[in-house]
Image (tube, rainbow, N blue to C red; front, top):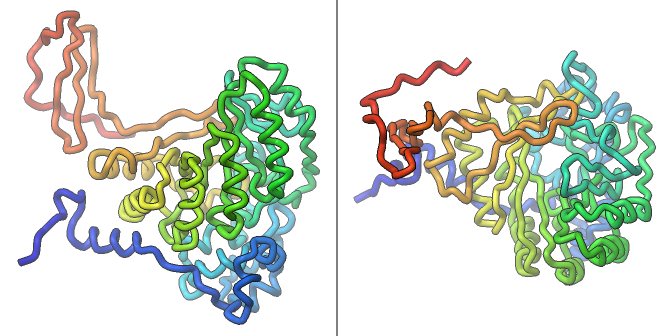
Length: 412
């Protein structure tokens, strides 16, 4: 006799089957590089040296480029360079024009169209940069940019003005000045290393920065933001993990967007970091044709937990110039959050945020669970739509009876 678990798992039997398929761990494989020696394939420096960076390489490996992709490739290096590691390229489905991996890393002609509301610096970082390479937007924490390079380049990158230097931003961090600024500002307790990708630095160079920052008494903990465990899991070596372990409390925020990115290789790399005592969180971007689907997102969040990673933020795609074709609606984001909250473990529910355009900082965005409130009570609904009253009276006694039914206003 079969057992229907759809109710407890928050979905219909067909949806559960799809979620379970998406949660399977598979190897990225070798693909076109099957003849490469194991020692080379598993060497992160070999992966970087052999990235796909030109139209000629891409056409040879993927002759199914669409006209939009081909035109985008011709113009790619004027905005954001093309770079894809051989490992990550193997996750692309060349037969599927809507492959979620393909949409993230292969340029499209739509990148050259800029809407009136789009910006080159949508988070206003340059306006909050007291010294080159450092952003001080929030009172007690700073963003410490270490490089303009990544293992591969996401086509929706918030820092595409800076990353890869395709547009001539000419980014040059000044580590000594950045560290001195942190040292001279005792209200700074949290430093986030980002870029580009900090894990592209050598172990020695990265350790130099961590050692200098850890020596500042008022810096309570350090963070690293990185897509390297996803693009280049070979970089997460035992030596790197042993070095990072020396600088606790140290947190690492990875960036991934789709369950297909969580391969066997990635799970092993993340396991090495977790075994080194490094708390892991994930930051995703809501992207059209990638993860703007509740079933995909539910599987993705649950699969992250299987990799010992806590879903942290789900970002509404920033208003970066040329990103309209990848931007899903806020309405879709709220719909997905509604379908996660209460329908899966709370650990699998990230905080949905909009980085307020122009430098306003992260603003949490949630479905409406508080229906009304006054001095005497709060009327709330749960994930099932059931209505409850919580008393606000000093002695805990409800001042009025809960209504039998509340009609929710239409979301405008």
